[in-house]
Image (cartoon, rainbow, N blue to C red; front, side, top):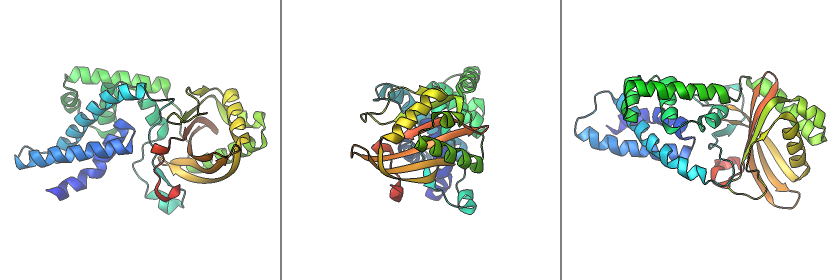
Amino acid sequence: MPDEFEAERPHLLAVAYRMLGSRAEAEDAVQEAWLRYAKARDGGEIHDLRGWLTTVTGRICLDVLKSARVSRAAYPGQWLPSFVVDPDAGPAARAEITDQVGLALLVVLEKLTPEQRVSVVLHDAFGVPFEDVATVLGTTDSAARQHASRGRRALARDAIRHNADLAEQRRVLEAFLAAAASGDLEALAAVLAPDVVAIGDGGGRPGVGTRPILGADKVARFYVGIVAGLGAVEMRTVLVNGSLGLLVRGEQANGRPLRSVLSLAVADGRITGLFNQLNPEKLVLSDLL
């Protein structure tokens, strides 16, 4: 029945978003799962609803990921997942923001093959048995386990550390903003981890770098230059995928309008990752922008 499917929709969206890194694509995948569910339901083929729907959604996402590798390879500049942005409210409101997958993890998941990503997400994040993962991939249990093992190794190798609570994230963000505003390179570099990475997704927008910036010194110089090029802007803290971020709106010094969301990863009192979303097509944030 439709109500049964609707009860599973949040779970399916969580599965699809982790696999695809795009809310729009995740919603499309779940809608496709609904169409397949409606057809199979009439034929009496479904016995374990959640398991069946998760498997079907996994297959749909696998197909999307395979085609996405081609389109993202041709993407102008750097590609970031779409952000899930919420107001930076009090603890009670934040408690309602559940089951968020961190942006730092999504960024690294992008480096996996489609098979590795499906295996890791289904088995490690949602506890799907490898027998069912193998069904999604159209392979053997052994091959599914191998995909997951290789995916885990890649995640461990390329992980962007992020383990700070919101209070520590806020302290670090404030120090980062103060140092950037003053142009104090030494103070700014002190809040950045030595292996910090900065990634900006402009969707082909002029002036947005096409490669990640690596290292505290380079990232510090980059952001001092960014701040120097700002005109009148409003900055507001928000939650991005459950972690602290910054909503920026206003204009650049040259008069061009500016809309962006900056998310950060923090570990051991320092920023390990800065993810700046400037692509207008991905900045669908209702009344926040």
